[in-house]
Amino acid sequence: QTMSKRHAGHAGSWYSDNRDELDKQLTKWLQAVTPAGELLPACGVIAPHAGYSYSGPTAAYAYRHIDPSRVKRVFILGPSHHYHLTGCAVTRHKAYETPLGDLEIDAAVTAELFSTGEFETMSTEVDEEEHSIEMHLPYVYKAMAAARHSFTIVPVLVGSLTPEKERFYGQLFAQYLQDPANFFVISSDFCHWGERFRYTYYNPAHGEIHESIAQLDKKGMDIIETQNPDTFLQYQQQFQNTICGRHPIAVLLNSLKVLGLSRGPQKRAPYDLKFVRYAQSSPCKHQNDSSVSYASAVLRCEDK
Image 1: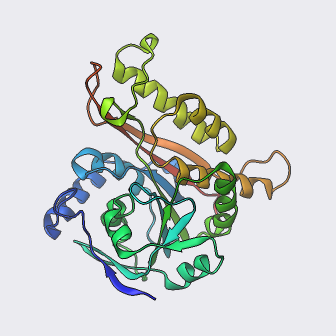
Image 2: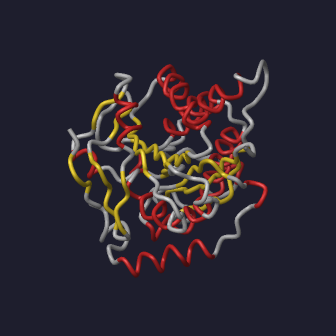
């Protein structure tokens, strides 16, 4: 059964709950970015989900590439931070609130996903506690504001998937990714470094700690750009980099692989995936420092 509306539980703490102030911030960050023409038209992004004071400017590099005239539906795949989930889950709400206005849930597609038997339904508590989807909502609202048509969103909470499940969901979402009216937002931060994250990998050959982190993230980003889910899995097994959205990213890579294979052997999908921005919350120099990395990528689709 659907409940009316998911409340924006992180507004007023992770980002402004004042409509005008939030709108001004988003406008400022978006205007600071010149979109990369060669990545248009875009059909998806990878973008961070931290508090806006940390990752808001980085996320703008992703959202500057949405063409609202093309998009009718925005899928948002976010990792589950608190709720233990081994598959994926959809919402039971009809709308998601943002300080800028409400976003309508695509009831038909949500029901279609649920009918596969491979999706749980989030409880309101799980839905409202999770920030990985919510942090994208004001940007989606703002970036789509120029659309002359109505549009919907499809929030999907992604659990700790096995490689087999990443392949399975990749296969399942491929048909949606192929539709030019759909846009995919893959929610992820990159390296969470420091004792408080229990991750302190450091290779002094790359210089200071923050330079080692950047090198490690860059290695992962390069692999993501090759759109190979198997190499990305090997990278994670080797370095255990704390990329919190690694499962949503892997689902996307598996979808792209499926679309590539459908064009015959050894063909890659007709998509370009390129990172357009990288930042760190602060430069780590000492063992007791900590930081989180943020990266934005754009997925360009073949011109339809």
